[in-house]
Length: 247
Image (cartoon, rainbow, N blue to C red; front, top):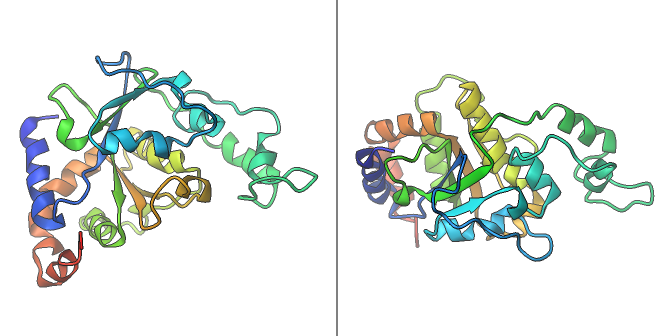
């Protein structure tokens, strides 16, 4: 990432969003780039919790062994399979137990069958906050943890130059699906749609109640940066919203 691009966004973010929380970036790599590899937490823990360090400015590196969650391994492109009958856990077992996020187990099986493992540059998944990017970094996407007013600004900026009705999507999936898998796929296939996340109740348990995620493929995000100073962000309407951010 060119330093001038990194600094331009930091400046504009402070100008229009009152120094709200900066986004976290992610990229796949063949090695850990001298970043300590994260150990798996004790017990089951969602990637949302594991990302707290990156949100606070500490770069982290994940490998398959860093992720204890079966779904997490699948949605981070570490595997293309799921354990037998795991669709019942997401839906329900014959005895009624289960998360009940889908009415029928077969619906989950169909979902996984149509969610292929994507090619990556390696099994090292590196998360860095935007202001810690170095010139050699090539992030695939950025992830915002946004309050409603910040989310409003990001959403409107994402659709600013688009006539598509689905320039922003809210696909079904676990927290890490919308955090990593879908924005990575959008960058990989060139569609460039932004992805709303933290709709999954299991993931929401690991985040503050007023946050959603807004993940943006890097190509789209760079275009958004270039358009900030000609967008609604310079209007009196936005000044009203901006005045509430951070208060």
